[in-house]
Length: 138
Ligand SMILES: [Zn+2]
Image (cartoon, rainbow, N blue to C red; front, side, top):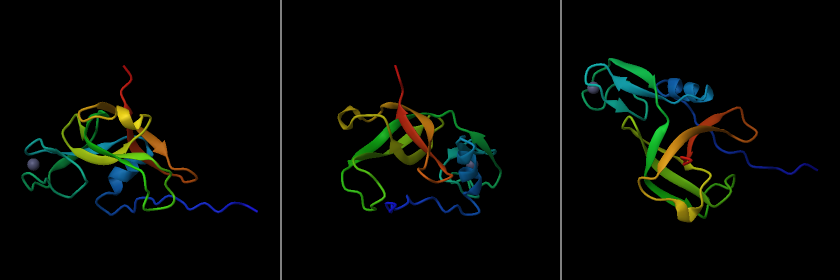
């Protein structure tokens, strides 16, 4: 008898966030840049959070970032996740901060301002890629 495994939850893209999630499936991270003030932002929205302009471009992020803050999760609130895992907010080189996971790092090696780089992890048994970060190899 096959073992039942609870699937991991997936994003539910809205009309505004669909271009972002579509880019992740191509393994690119698109962020928005205001044509009027030059501000970069995440999460996706229909106007610039700085100047309220609706003139913007979606541009590919460099993938370079540093850890703004992090935690080690030892007790998952949803049973599909194996613990421990690292939840973090990283600051992209372009400026926006995003919620993500840090992968490939021991708990004790995490620190604020740690350089990390983007990669896309395929969700197990799903046709989805999610943006995650790993330590920059020196
Ligand atoms: Zn703006």
